[in-house]
Image (cartoon, rainbow, N blue to C red; front, side):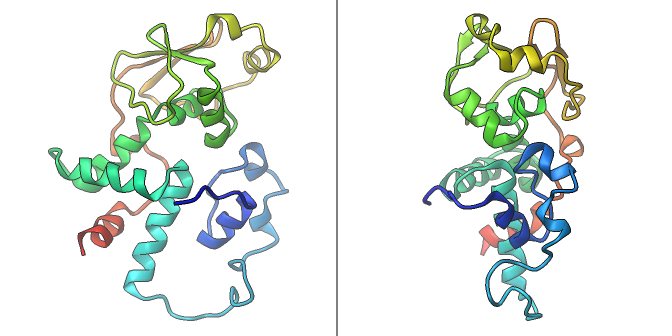
Length: 207
């Protein structure tokens, strides 16, 4: 799937909910959803009844867009989840939640997942002392994620020290002074705050 390069807020309008793709803007009065409720396009205001397939497809698209993964990547996580013990849908979301770019976002080092992904791509992050520039890298319990030592003097990170982390979850621990975090345990479904009905996605892929 080609990378989407259009307006991020257009995606939120299409899914009819906040996907938190623009960082602080999503929580401000400037959020596009506050003024434009209908999906984009000339037929956006139509009240056509959604089919079962359409509802399942929209749920999958919403999940992909929240985490910023491609169709190929998303299908890969689903396939891997089917081979694991437990509930497939929950396993799939937990796998995606363990992505390094998502963990960097959860630690508050990026205002959005897109920004966190760019930070990882540019080699600013280390895992257990080694530079990792692959956003899809899956963290494990006990891993230490930190800003690279020779990057800590950058203005971006100095500003981050003074910002209260609102995205931190209980399975992560953050050391504000050293700009590092630790994965205390693997996330569980209850730890994922995204409004995703994963059973619909499983139903779609199971057809």
